[in-house]
Length: 535
Image (cartoon, rainbow, N blue to C red; front, top):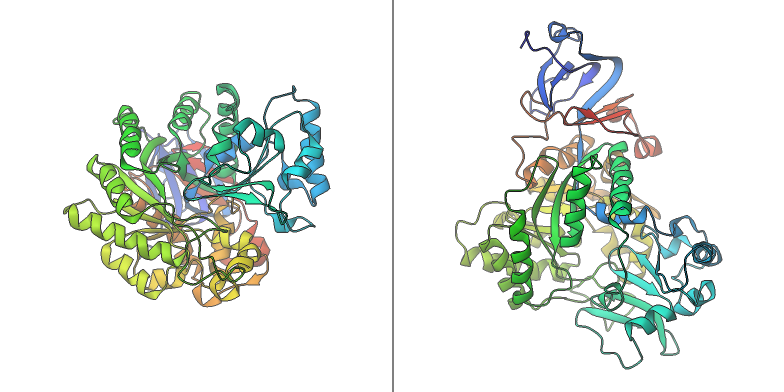
């Protein structure tokens, strides 16, 4: 080791390796893309210093592993780099004016898209714009307004192009919105979104690569080193590969290829045929994790056991027939891929566990971690215990709750919203639980998520404080547990010699930081595979 030296040496106030029982270290050395050594003595690795070693003396700094965001949408973040930034609007006139400004510089007939990371309750009018209002911004361009991954609003031009009329059948698992007068209002939810989105041309290859370059750097700047992107179409994965080749990915990406919008096993088999080309093509920065299904809707259509607070005749939407979903999931695991399934409401959680239990019974010896529950939002004690007994990992997203609590109270009422993402219950059961953001529905950020899980703070105050976990537990959900979810504990999650040099450097100890200071805290450096990410 002495002969080869180190490429990077960090001397810090504390290096938290997250190895159980190991006291904080004071020095960490990197060679190539791996951690070479750690030492409790700040000068204990000085013998590795050569003329080529980059040395950082940071006596007040804290070093932690890089964080995972185990359920997010980097693809959407990259696309948003070129979209109309409506998340900056404070009211609907400002929202429309931003679209109007883009229309003024966009050739007539070309599509206009918006960013997706906004909530209607943050607008003064506390509602979404309508097709008629979008028409006042432009009637010469089709407009696609996206909010999160489950909701679209489009203008009349887009409705005409898609052939959507008053008589258009509503796709199973979707909603075509209507106003109080019964006429189309431009709203499209879940499986109805495809009626329009299939017509929207994608940005060109160069634009998409640059969007991913910017978005991945933004993730890294918050302390995130690996993203599990849970909605990647085959065409998106090819763009990710091109971005990788262009040196434009600043975080590791584990992609879930999207089966959203598919309705039967034959379509899933076609998707799996497409995925065959990616076997053996993964590298440390980019790989396919598996396939993503959606069982129920999002904020407005999560499948619940009890009716919605705002509509006692409605209890959400199940997108798949359970028997059909068993066949579809089985098709995936029999090809050797893993499955992550969106289940948000408590009815969806129950049905998904039924589906997974049947798949496990019919496929004995299935590798651990092959079947994952995404969200498990309203999983109650009985369903949490059942998930643990079945060995089903779950991903939770506190930033989603933080940003949408007021919206969700309108649909589900305060009692159910306070029960969302019960981290304390999952951890106490020893569940395979890990954490993320669900950007663009929630804001991504390493310490933003930690702050949320330790405080249960939302935009309308603390919700469900009994579900809070400790700072140390929150770290584990983003590091050790996250690496376990992707099957990479031998490569990352702890700062251990031989593992990848994925780490974050903070100018103060986050453990001693509270309130909004912790929420907004960002590392001074994020290092991925020994390379410092741009800021």
